[in-house]
Image (cartoon, rainbow, N blue to C red; front, side, top):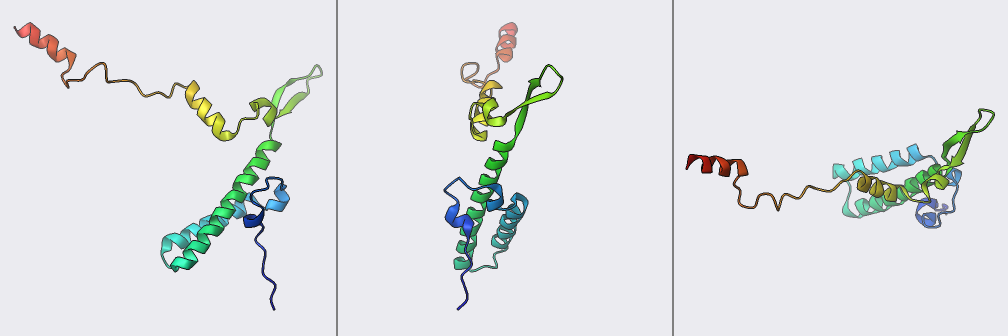
Length: 139
């Protein structure tokens, strides 16, 4: 009897303690997801096969996110230069205060003032104030 091939990404995706070597290569894994998406979009798969492929793609996406998380933890940021002119680096997590990429993105949007302007108080009738001024001049 043939031994069933084990899918580590589906079984181990939730533990978060894997190294990049255990998770595999990001580009290869993402390429696998893209291949599955093309198969799903082609419409050639049966419903059952489509669902199975979807599950595999979701597991591989989790694997990609874990690989990105591992890479993010490895990144170091230039913190300055020491007295001898050598660069001083700190891990990225020390610089960010432990924020995730999503949290950083949300706070960056707030800092940039990503608030839609409020048009409700300026014009509720659909008549431009310049039109009102010209109408008064005509009288």
